[in-house]
Amino acid sequence: MGWALRFQGVGNASAVELGSAMATLEREGAPWLTIDCGSEGLDAFIAHYGHAPSALFVTHTHLDHVGGFERLFGTAYFNPARRGQVVLYVPAPIVPLLHQRVAEYPNVLAEGGANFWDAFRLVPVGEAFWHDGVRLEVFPVRHHWPQTAFGLRLPGAVVWTGDTRPIPEMLARYADDDEVIAHDCALHGNPSHSGIEDLEREYAPALLARCVLYHHASADEARALAARGHHVALPGQVLALSNPRPVPISD
Image 1 (cartoon, rainbow, N blue to C red):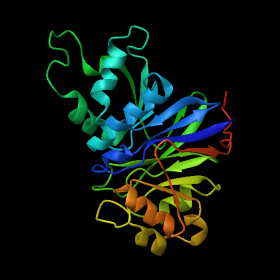
Image 2: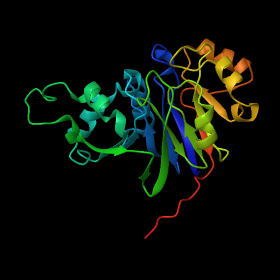
Image 3: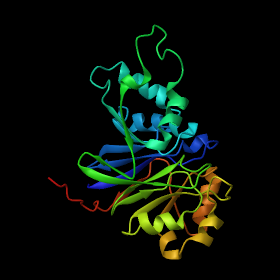
């Protein structure tokens, strides 16, 4: 089966019926690395795989993308085999923001004796990181405020923009190997998110043809985007990916 991307959810913060925007990179049919952890997305992950994620990358800390962390803490902390073993790859600039969002509450357990991060293995990352022997790349995107949101690239296979306005300059650098591009897009844009007219204006047709659009405001919006001839992600959809471009590991 090789590599694939499975969408747990494709909606924006208000499109509960579409699930929070979240996806998982699969390798040979097994979950390999999950992107974000929204509440509805985590429900969909557990319903499909039968267990919670073991490795995640966090794009940013808006609650529709990190709202599942309290439950994820419970699945890890109370399971001796998982406690401290759930790997979180978090861009270094947003580590403090993630802590404020999900870990700051006093006494994560009422009886005390536990820290929120005891459940996880936190790995702050910069421009690139290694997971399971494979190198991935990280890049800033244009969402809400500088250095608070990041995209992810598995070179040669897929680019996940996260929530963003159009980023032609970033995709020229981080999607230059014919990758599938999972891109934030609704029918109408706003100062933090892309609308379809934004992408049609900013991106060359060949680049836009590689984009699979997610973060819709409703199922009707998704149908309207598809009617314009674009690839539109659906909850539970699986995209087959090319094998990642190998990067030699030096001695």
